[in-house]
Length: 182
Image (cartoon, rainbow, N blue to C red; front, top):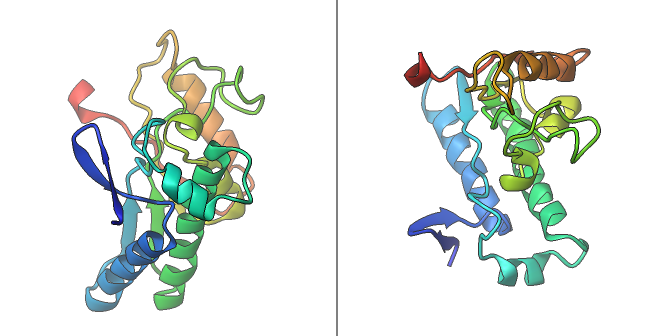
């Protein structure tokens, strides 16, 4: 009951509070039982816009007029809870996420990057800029898998955008690069 089938795979439903708690509890079990330095998450909180969570939205999304805003808030709650609980368990733990390289394009959100590719803010409901600005992650590792000069997702433009995003915060920036493209 906690999963949603999407394109032949099953995904935990981030809209369910018990799923978010299960993820927090699972990471706490790792931190409490093993000598780990950090917890790192990849970026696919919602695998796509056609994710079938309408029943969950009806049950938990009454405060939101927009499905996308509700989904982003679900992910924000998860990230914030992980940050809080992991650092309670181990103040020295490092917690971070590898979001897709493009948070949002400037033509969609004015503070986005001067790019034209797939936007994690809308495609995966990952508001990674908020996580940085709120200090909910110790580091951010955006997946900038394009080369310098790429027509729609220039590496240099994205690296600078992320550097400006973390500027003035305590969040470290590590650029995620695709070894398979070397």
